[in-house]
Image (tube, rainbow, N blue to C red; front, top):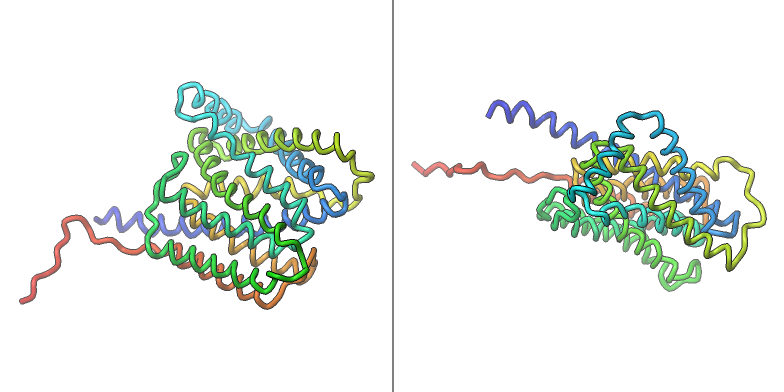
Length: 329
């Protein structure tokens, strides 16, 4: 009993740190969306923009891996886990979702704006988070989807509706452009589960993140070869170096997610990412707009998203086993 009392505050502290770190990762997602969206517009080629972003992140990770004994040991553990069946080959495919997400950034974010792009991503993340946490998909710790989680997810979906509804039926952007980031958001929830499982087997966030970027870069390379054979190469690369930081930012926020998903679960992780993404996307739309400008509804959606994170993070107390209610005198 006393031991539990001593460990609980520390456990709550680690959970709080994981939540804050994941919100910061969400800010990184919005930064990457803003950068890759503009890179795609400048190149007039979302495929090349996606390959530059994901490929540069892969190069960074490989360079770090060369000088990291723990990372190299983690890669060996991944291979060993595949050989003995502890890790299935399809659990390495999280990078496909990451690659599709970055491709959506390059193709769509500049058309519909960072905030609306983020909101479409958020919808998919929230729905997938419920499924993955409830089923324990890919070995993720199964977490009961109780009232707090359902309410938190519902509040976040309401935030999506509040932000998107004023845009529907207008001519600001094609309605079909929302479909691509929505699918990417659904896929990202599974990516987080896959990456968390690879990290658990390898005991290395660096190894898990490198696997993710290797698979994603390979897929984007193939897609880009097909695209270039049809449409040709971009005429000129933009000179602004800031437009090439998307890959570096991606390595950071994917590594954070890979570590924190085991602590807070896929649903709360997705909701934390929602809060960070929406807040940062609103700021970008205010100071460095890309695509349609934000509205008051977008600001309201940010507040609701934060509320959803807080509600979904509530841990309702459970009665102790064997505990009985006192009898009335």
